[in-house]
Amino acid sequence: MYRLHRCNRAKACILALLSIISPLFSADTYPKTPDGARAFMEAVEADLMQIFTEDARAGWVNANFITHDTQILASKATEKTVSTIVRYAKESTRFDGVKMPDDLARKFKALKNSTAMPTPGDPKLAAELAQIVTRMTGTYGKGKYTPPGSNPLDLGDLSEILAEHKDPEQMLMAWEGWRTVSPAIRKDYQRFVELANQGARELGFKNLAEMWCGKYDMPPEEFPKELDRLWEQVKPLYISLHAYVRNKLRDHYGAEVVPADGPIPAHLLGNMWSQQWSNIYDLVSPGDADPGYDLTQILKDRKMDAIQMVKVGERFFTSLGFEPLPATFWERSLFVQPKDRDVVCHASAWSIDFKDDLRIKMCIKINADDFSTIHHELGHNFYQRAYNHQPLFFQESANDGFHEAVGDTLSLSITPNYLKDLGYIDAVPDPSKDIGLLLNQALDKIAFLPFGLLIDQWRWKVFSGEVTPENYNKAWWELRKKYQGIMPPVKRTEEHFDPAAKYHVAANVPYTRYFLAHILQFQFHRSLAEAAGNEGPLHRASIYGSKKAGKILADMLAMGSSQPWPEALYAISGTRQMDAGAILDYFAPLKEWLDKQNEGRPVGW
Ligand code: X8Z
Ligand code: ZN
Image 1: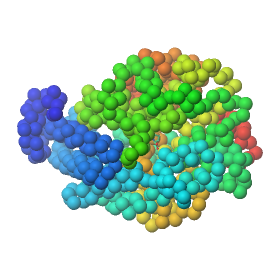
Image 2 (image 1 turned 90 degrees about the vertical axis):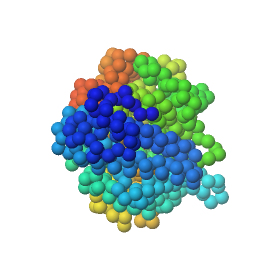
Image 3 (image 1 turned 135 degrees about the vertical axis):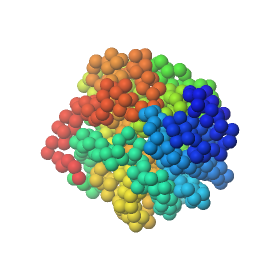
Image 4 (image 1 turned 30 degrees about the horizontal axis):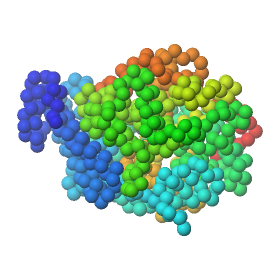
């Protein structure tokens, strides 16, 4: 349905109506005036709203039933979406030079940058690009490895081995096994880069990297510098954590497996990509500072099922004053991995119709990781609903890091006090256990930072041509070493394609957003915790039940992307700069403790 009520100026409204009557409208029919530009934009928004909705339905069905036919349907829908965006973006140059109010100029900018995979104008190439991205995502989603004499194992099975086994041989099998899926993506990826770069150039960008960096309300060349600044702030903390973990792993696995002063072998960190390390907490726990409870065990002991876990997540949001999720959320979401078909298990949150048709799609396992991922996904849904009154091009987060930070912000409030309120633990551990709490949190939040950064560092080099297909894997492992201080446990060559063993590379989802989110969520947490009246240390603060914090959050979410992100950041935190001060404050006691543990031992790699 077109949304005529969006027309708020009479002249623009009539022009927009005209273009709806003739759906194949062109910018040429609009006068080169501010009113003409506004009318064109309203028609574009109405048309794209429909196209996006159709695309979301096809994408949803495809991700829930990966078959030959759904791949075709989904790629056709994507092709239509992206080609339409690109066509309107090109036509919109007709209004270059027209003096527009800020809000309208912002929409024109958003139009030009509203896809992560711009298709070339040539329809054949556009179709090829859409097919490639759908195929890469499908290959990843269906991926399985069959060890000799065993059943096929999917990513969930292999991840579980890495998370739970402490047998290096088994872990190596899982690590290498999953990486037998991605070489099939290499050729597609290479072609994807050529085509998407061509699409970006046709829109006036140097390449896809410049386009991706152009979404942050600052010149694209400034954005990487902003990231460097943030990374330099947090790097010392990461290096301290890395050194401590390396020592503990060396104690456990022996000097022949873990070097004293080199990178850590990637299969020992409890996660398929070594991106979050809390699964090895038991190997590195600080002895007498351990808080003495294990959330995974608690969820299992309480015989929680997937839906109950999502209900607990929803209750956190309603405790802040948000409306409960609609009944259709519960009817249409996917919570449990179906046994009889291939689905994309990588968790995601959807707003199908830009109003209330909200859903998550997740293969929930009963553990602490997924408990927090549930909050993460619900954060997307509550954000989507909070800005659903905005015009299409402002139905986005302030910057993409904000979208990824909302649910995580709430997860930071899953403190012992909160767990006691839920009746999950009987007593709150005393402050002498804080190092255990902080270490557990750092294994996820601090370990993630260099990983969050390096994926797009690799892609930007690939898009700009600095890294060529002959060096895809080599460049990948150089960055893994440089930022994370990890190394492959076995020799890797250009026969492999390890970047695409990560969902976001195969599915072409930009990744810097998660790095930003890890910085932002601590800024959000600090100011919301203060609003909620917390006075103690940040890592003990919970905003559960605080309507005051909830209102501040909801007001910021409702802004969508209607204003530059520094304004949204100001609204929630009183500052306009992304800054690692809050995350450093949060972990300050741990940093001191880690440095003491590391005394006299090698640090760095
Ligand atoms: O992809 C996700 C979410 C969906 S937006 C589950 N995350 C990143 C990942 O899994 O690699 C959340 C943390 C980082
Ligand atoms: Zn997310």
